[in-house]
Length: 165
Ligand code: ADP
Image (cartoon, rainbow, N blue to C red):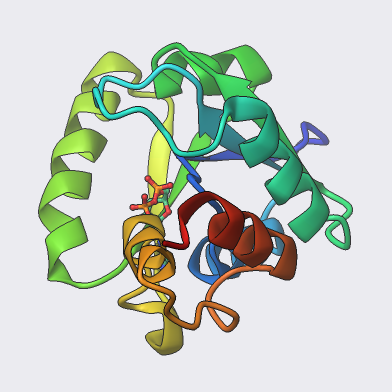
């Protein structure tokens, strides 16, 4: 054993953060010395995020304030390069229903090919959040659905401001 801190990166678009993300973040934070929530700044996905990078980061900072070893940072390079730049050797991903598996398997293999020294650790979604996604929450908010049990209070308020019709 060495004294080198064990650092992990938890990447995503977090547009916006949900209780499903927070469940994975807090469980991962228990397993590492430092956990960096890495927020995609420029995405290959062409769709423009609803919230700008600063606001997405601020939502995460507020929601993880009680977790002393967690911080949020933007990134706009390959995830493995971002991990390397931090000295992180682990990428943590949450797996929901079967649909996440295929995509994550492909991404995991591609990342492994780019950086064999950075491994990916998968945590299964908790049952109550298995079907929770940022896009689902945005859809609910658009039509005035109740999202209070799905996202932190400030996020719910901002979604309602941005989307309620
Ligand atoms: P989304 O798919 O909700 O837009 P992101 O692109 O921000 O989320 O995903 C970041 C990571 O969080 C991914 O590994 C994704 O599988 C995981 N994740 C998202 N929602 C949940 C959830 N409800 N439970 C567990 N993991 C989740």
